[in-house]
Image 1 (cartoon, rainbow, N blue to C red):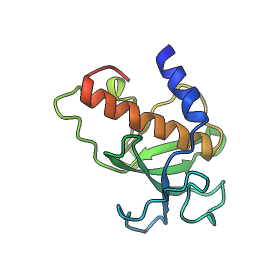
Image 2: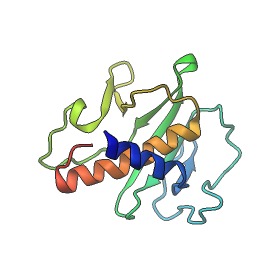
Image 3: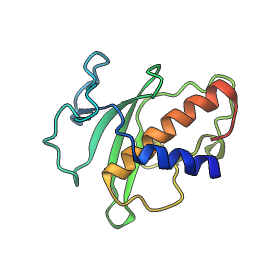
Length: 142
C-alpha cells in the first residue's frame, strides 16, 4: 500500500496524456494530445460533466478508454470502457482493483476514498492503468 501511495503522489504532479471524446464519439488512436501543458484536445467540457477520455499508459504501449461519471454526493467513478487482456493473471476484483456495476454492466476503478473531482478521478485512472500494465507484465499486485 505504501508503494501505491508513492505512485499516487507522483501522479498528482503529472499531467497524463488524455484525449477527450464525446459520449458518442469513437476514440482515435492517432489523435492524442502530446503537449503536456494542454492535456486535452477539447477543453469545452465542463469539469462537472460526465466525460469519456482515453489514456495512453506512461510507456506508450496501451490505450485505455474511461468514462468519468459523476455520482453526485458519492463523488466520481472511472468506468473502464476498454477490454483489458489480463493474460493468465487473476482477474478477480481484489487482484485488479475493479468493482463491477451490475446496473451498467461495467467495471470501475476501485479506490478506498471518495473521489471528489474529475481531475482527481483522471489521476487515479492513470495510476490504475500503469499499475495494471505492471501487474499484467510482472504479476506484482496492484
